[in-house]
View 1: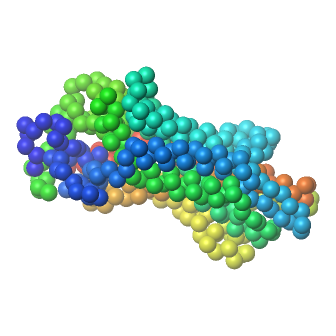
View 2 (view 1 turned 90 degrees about the vertical axis):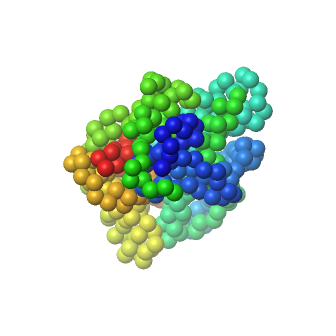
View 3 (view 1 turned 30 degrees about the horizontal axis):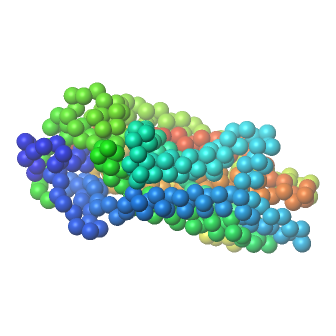
Length: 208
Length: 203
């Protein structure tokens, strides 16, 4: 049980049940759990700003490859069509269904690209430690936090796989560079989002 | 760690952890000292917002399942498929894994979300604390799996965009597609508005 007169910074409140705990130092790869509800309180950061910045730059390149390189081709009785991911937005925009076009553009391009660009700005600001950039760090991190639940790239990947299986029964499908770039992008995204703690970034911002 | 029987919550200690950045601080301030967001001890109007989004989602769930999600025209033959119709077709074509994925993501997960969130909201309303550990864990699970319902919407978007076989076949999104996407988005908003700490406050 925490002492009532400990400084606030030595305490942590569980985000699931609000119980106060006294912070204890963690070893490599350790996690602290709430003693009442069993939720995760905090964990050691397994990733640095430097590595995350490098991975974000890699992700942006992979995002461009995934959108602009041939994604897959469909072969129906020798009638071959090659598809680019970016052209799906173009096709959707030609339909009468404006809302679905907007939803597609938001979930497939605008939100994922937006989060990557905001990540790039924030991490490079924290990494370079230049004054004009760090001024916006707070706003950037707030915006990233707001967009994060709507970044559904890994769900989209499962959608791509389901689509391929569905189409495989009526046509011959071959996967191209764009598809593999997309798979790599999702993997890196998952790694960054599970290893980099927002708390770490807030503390880095606090130091400036 | 120490036992919790006499332990304090942040609220009882006059503290609040910012619901945006997580910084623990005195609750006397209006705004978070670290990120500047409005500071609350509990998410404001959590129960009301959760209910409002959940009811909206329930209403959208009907057209999402009753109307066709995809309209296919192949060699002049029109075909309209609802979500469950698509699952039955996949099953009959022996695409069992895909049928199971779509059935789980599109039918089971939304129903599970409706059930769990409304049960937890009732539990807060009655101030009755059952097995709070399990309730909290259940909420975290459905919060995580909720967005996966979007799979079918992405599949429709992809099929519409991909199938342009020079007039041999066309695929158009059905009226259920937007209702379904709206249903997933509103259930996610309902989960985001929900505050699990309210479950524990009656303890």
